[in-house]
Length: 174
Image 1 (cartoon, rainbow, N blue to C red):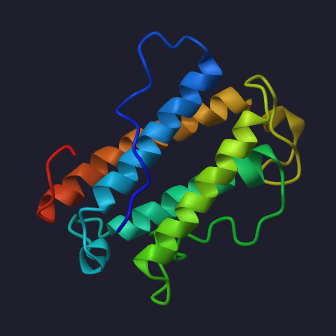
Image 2: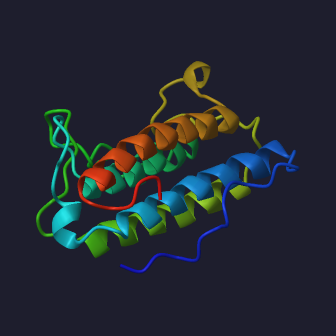
Image 3: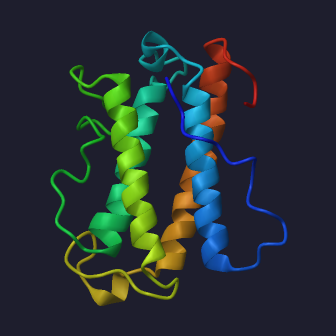
């Protein structure tokens, strides 16, 4: 699988602008995800190696849906079809058989591009809209809160993916 050009690492240590820093770390994790899964064949992408049973491809699809839920459905309050489409109805992640690894990765990359557009056009103190994922203005978080939430989601899942890739014979910590 081809991965996009990767940043050399984390955003620079002299970076102080919170908006740029949050967006930079999200891109760092997005690219790390693509780099890690590029070590796996189509077959390996669909094998669950941990007791919970999730597969690396399911994780990629889950993170695309997480970004869509929080930024499109939540922050922009746009109606989206099946915001929980990454779940199979039993709280597990799911990738339909007809979707190839390339399809899932392409959808992830498209969602990341859309997410970048959304975050670049908004201020960190801007509150999410009402009508998508949030019913009342009192429950709407700021963009800063949403971006921090996305970062913790990526950080947690990247650790999970490290283990899955290692168990599949991929490089450790790559």
